[in-house]
Length: 135
Image (cartoon, rainbow, N blue to C red; front, side, top):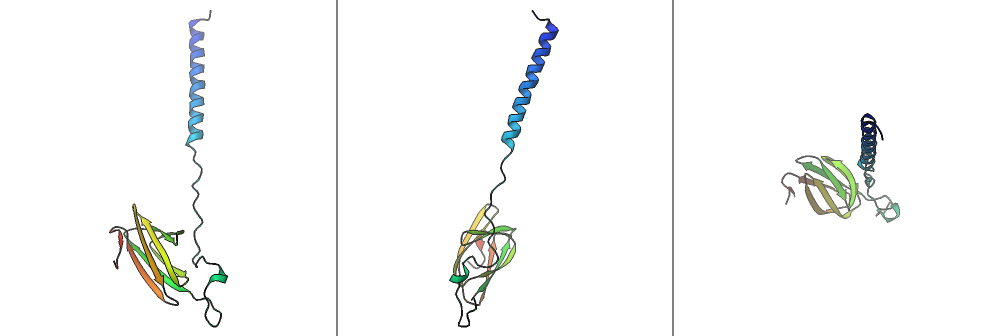
Protein backbone atom coordinates (compact mmCIF):
# COMPACT_ATOMS: atom_id res chain seq x y z
CA UNK A 1 0.00 0.00 0.00
CA UNK A 2 1.20 3.53 -0.73
CA UNK A 3 1.85 6.11 1.91
CA UNK A 4 -0.67 8.97 2.42
CA UNK A 5 1.84 11.55 1.18
CA UNK A 6 2.34 9.65 -2.06
CA UNK A 7 -1.44 9.36 -2.60
CA UNK A 8 -1.77 13.15 -2.40
CA UNK A 9 1.04 13.50 -4.93
CA UNK A 10 -0.73 11.15 -7.39
CA UNK A 11 -4.03 12.97 -6.81
CA UNK A 12 -2.45 16.39 -7.44
CA UNK A 13 -0.69 15.14 -10.59
CA UNK A 14 -3.96 13.69 -11.90
CA UNK A 15 -5.81 16.93 -11.22
CA UNK A 16 -3.13 18.98 -12.95
CA UNK A 17 -3.19 16.66 -15.98
CA UNK A 18 -6.98 16.92 -16.15
CA UNK A 19 -6.82 20.68 -15.87
CA UNK A 20 -4.23 20.84 -18.66
CA UNK A 21 -6.45 18.73 -20.96
CA UNK A 22 -9.51 20.86 -20.26
CA UNK A 23 -7.56 24.08 -20.79
CA UNK A 24 -6.07 22.84 -24.07
CA UNK A 25 -9.53 21.86 -25.32
CA UNK A 26 -10.92 25.26 -24.37
CA UNK A 27 -8.14 27.10 -26.16
CA UNK A 28 -8.62 25.01 -29.31
CA UNK A 29 -12.37 25.56 -29.35
CA UNK A 30 -12.07 29.26 -28.57
CA UNK A 31 -10.07 29.98 -31.71
CA UNK A 32 -12.53 30.89 -34.43
CA UNK A 33 -11.59 31.03 -38.07
CA UNK A 34 -11.41 34.58 -39.40
CA UNK A 35 -14.73 35.74 -40.89
CA UNK A 36 -14.96 35.46 -44.63
CA UNK A 37 -16.25 38.70 -46.11
CA UNK A 38 -17.01 38.97 -49.79
CA UNK A 39 -14.45 41.15 -51.51
CA UNK A 40 -15.63 44.76 -51.84
CA UNK A 41 -17.02 45.87 -55.17
CA UNK A 42 -14.72 48.25 -56.99
CA UNK A 43 -15.66 51.90 -57.32
CA UNK A 44 -16.75 51.32 -60.89
CA UNK A 45 -19.82 49.30 -61.79
CA UNK A 46 -19.56 45.55 -61.68
CA UNK A 47 -20.83 44.83 -65.20
CA UNK A 48 -18.30 43.42 -67.68
CA UNK A 49 -16.90 45.95 -70.16
CA UNK A 50 -18.67 44.29 -73.08
CA UNK A 51 -22.06 44.81 -71.41
CA UNK A 52 -21.53 48.49 -70.61
CA UNK A 53 -23.57 50.90 -72.70
CA UNK A 54 -21.59 53.09 -75.06
CA UNK A 55 -22.34 56.31 -76.89
CA UNK A 56 -21.86 56.96 -80.63
CA UNK A 57 -18.12 57.59 -80.10
CA UNK A 58 -17.76 54.20 -78.40
CA UNK A 59 -17.09 55.67 -74.94
CA UNK A 60 -18.65 54.03 -71.89
CA UNK A 61 -21.64 55.89 -70.52
CA UNK A 62 -21.44 56.13 -66.75
CA UNK A 63 -23.18 58.13 -64.06
CA UNK A 64 -22.37 59.17 -60.50
CA UNK A 65 -24.24 58.37 -57.31
CA UNK A 66 -23.40 60.59 -54.34
CA UNK A 67 -24.40 58.84 -51.13
CA UNK A 68 -24.36 60.51 -47.70
CA UNK A 69 -25.12 58.56 -44.51
CA UNK A 70 -26.19 60.49 -41.42
CA UNK A 71 -26.39 59.13 -37.89
CA UNK A 72 -23.13 57.17 -38.01
CA UNK A 73 -21.22 55.03 -40.47
CA UNK A 74 -22.94 52.24 -42.34
CA UNK A 75 -22.22 49.35 -44.65
CA UNK A 76 -23.09 49.99 -48.30
CA UNK A 77 -24.36 47.34 -50.68
CA UNK A 78 -25.03 48.03 -54.38
CA UNK A 79 -27.09 45.43 -56.25
CA UNK A 80 -26.49 42.97 -53.39
CA UNK A 81 -22.69 43.34 -53.43
CA UNK A 82 -20.81 44.86 -50.51
CA UNK A 83 -19.03 48.10 -51.38
CA UNK A 84 -17.68 48.92 -47.91
CA UNK A 85 -18.13 51.09 -44.83
CA UNK A 86 -19.01 54.69 -45.41
CA UNK A 87 -20.33 57.96 -44.16
CA UNK A 88 -20.00 59.61 -47.57
CA UNK A 89 -19.22 57.96 -50.88
CA UNK A 90 -19.19 58.78 -54.57
CA UNK A 91 -19.83 55.82 -56.85
CA UNK A 92 -19.57 55.47 -60.60
CA UNK A 93 -22.42 53.30 -61.88
CA UNK A 94 -23.82 52.26 -65.21
CA UNK A 95 -27.07 53.99 -66.14
CA UNK A 96 -30.18 52.10 -65.06
CA UNK A 97 -31.84 50.82 -61.91
CA UNK A 98 -29.68 49.86 -58.95
CA UNK A 99 -30.63 48.52 -55.52
CA UNK A 100 -28.89 50.60 -52.83
CA UNK A 101 -28.82 49.20 -49.30
CA UNK A 102 -27.32 50.83 -46.21
CA UNK A 103 -26.95 48.82 -42.99
CA UNK A 104 -26.03 50.27 -39.62
CA UNK A 105 -27.06 50.42 -35.96
CA UNK A 106 -29.34 47.41 -36.41
CA UNK A 107 -31.26 49.02 -39.28
CA UNK A 108 -31.47 48.25 -42.99
CA UNK A 109 -32.40 50.93 -45.48
CA UNK A 110 -33.11 49.78 -49.01
CA UNK A 111 -34.01 51.76 -52.10
CA UNK A 112 -34.12 51.23 -55.85
CA UNK A 113 -32.47 54.19 -57.59
CA UNK A 114 -32.71 55.08 -61.27
CA UNK A 115 -29.34 56.42 -62.36
CA UNK A 116 -29.57 58.41 -65.58
CA UNK A 117 -26.85 58.54 -68.21
CA UNK A 118 -24.20 61.14 -67.47
CA UNK A 119 -26.10 62.58 -64.50
CA UNK A 120 -25.19 62.76 -60.84
CA UNK A 121 -27.76 61.49 -58.35
CA UNK A 122 -27.65 62.32 -54.62
CA UNK A 123 -29.06 60.02 -51.97
CA UNK A 124 -29.10 60.80 -48.24
CA UNK A 125 -29.71 58.00 -45.71
CA UNK A 126 -30.37 58.72 -42.04
CA UNK A 127 -29.59 55.62 -40.00
CA UNK A 128 -30.94 57.07 -36.74
CA UNK A 129 -34.32 57.83 -38.30
CA UNK A 130 -34.27 54.59 -40.31
CA UNK A 131 -35.15 56.15 -43.66
CA UNK A 132 -33.88 58.02 -46.67
CA UNK A 133 -34.36 61.77 -46.17
CA UNK A 134 -36.32 62.46 -49.34
CA UNK A 135 -39.04 59.96 -48.35
